[in-house]
Length: 197
Image (tube, rainbow, N blue to C red; front, top):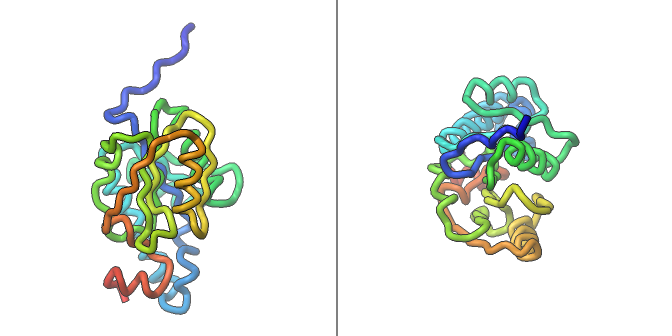
């Protein structure tokens, strides 16, 4: 019996969205928003990101039953990370997308309140695409091949770290500045910039 054929995909790109527990989201905003408000905000932003991902297949990486149920209800596949940590989570999502037959994966954070269509990022004529946050410090969206060795570098200074890692991997890269993807919600200042405070 032969190897099963890879699924037919419209663009060869899947979206990976790592999501923490809604109930414990955005702890850095605890002095500004109540736990209930933070939970509602995290859920609303995640829904916005999944809507922006259509029609691409989405893999939500999470270790929380509520998030997993929510993801399945919204048409996403669910991936359980093998170990704690954001870098481990997105690596697990990349592997799941590769196993499902996708040639590239677009990693997108779930706290982007203004996210719009993500599919256009796959049209850039380079191997990879990186979308920095509005401070050009973090990485809010990252398109990479699913084949080949690659280590994710999320955390402080990830934009520069990912650029260096992409170059080291031998991939060409386009940096895309998009206001709708540049704003994530980590601080009270971010809330003000989003018109939420």
